Image 1 (cartoon, rainbow, N blue to C red):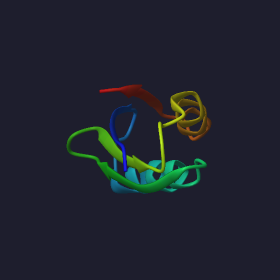
Image 2 (cartoon, rainbow, N blue to C red):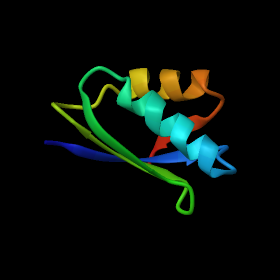
Image 3 (cartoon, rainbow, N blue to C red):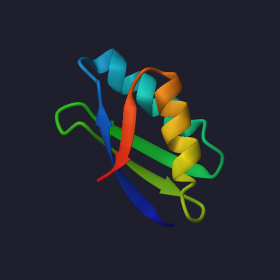
Image 4 (cartoon, rainbow, N blue to C red):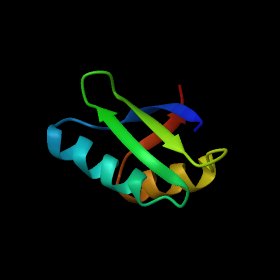
Length: 69
């Protein structure tokens, strides 16, 4: 299962991290998403190659910015 680490910008609290985790979990193909507020990053495990465009869009829709770490 491929794992991708993302830098997440704009998180300021645990609620933010939970929102990002929920959004990432909704991306097709994502099996597991863990978000670290302290590190400003997310670790995503997916069935195959991660569709970064879909990830960036759904995270952006929640008010945050995702980039490849």
